[in-house]
Image (cartoon, rainbow, N blue to C red; front, side, top):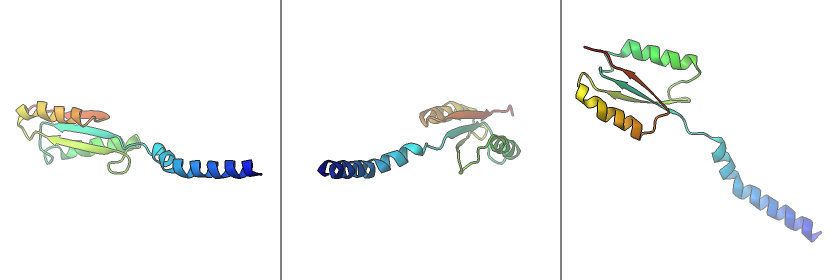
Length: 102
């Protein structure tokens, strides 16, 4: 009977100790999408709405199950390489760019 008590006690302790790890393992990190634009947020409003709509059609909603990192060059094309490097360093899962000639 001592063996059963030991196994029950040890098993319960192990389950209690492992519970936080198991719970954390089940929660995956929210994916991050990078959005890079040569324009300003105001100039890109309709395109940004279409981008969000497209994400929504595939089941992704900003703040709910996806994070979007925005970078706006606002017509300063020389800023684009540094902004793209920031998104790479951020390790985004996907990237979208909206670069229109002005």
